[in-house]
Length: 125
Image 1 (cartoon, one colour):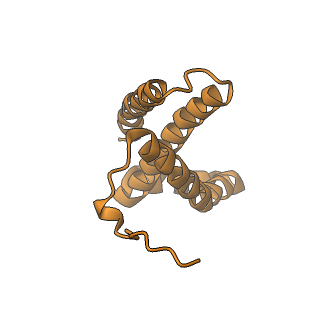
Image 2 (cartoon, helix red, strand yellow):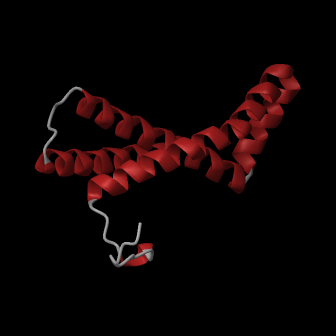
């Protein structure tokens, strides 16, 4: 195919609409949650191995800033992924499948997720 159309591969010049951004972030949080399962399974295994293992995991989470950041990051990713997943389920049910409805649902997703991320931060810290 010999097309003479201009090709713009510089993603920094493309303005994505809010529904596209929320959809992309939903995918990214899914990948982060999958990778974060390594940390979660390690903590679960160590905490269930013995009472000393449970104390070790508790002390690690209480005293280590990096562990708290990882836990907060995973909870934040889970919160956003959950809210965005509900948005996608609503879209699959053909509710509000218009341009205005998509933007409104994306705005609601961002606001609800931000509230949940703040609540997760309060809970972890």
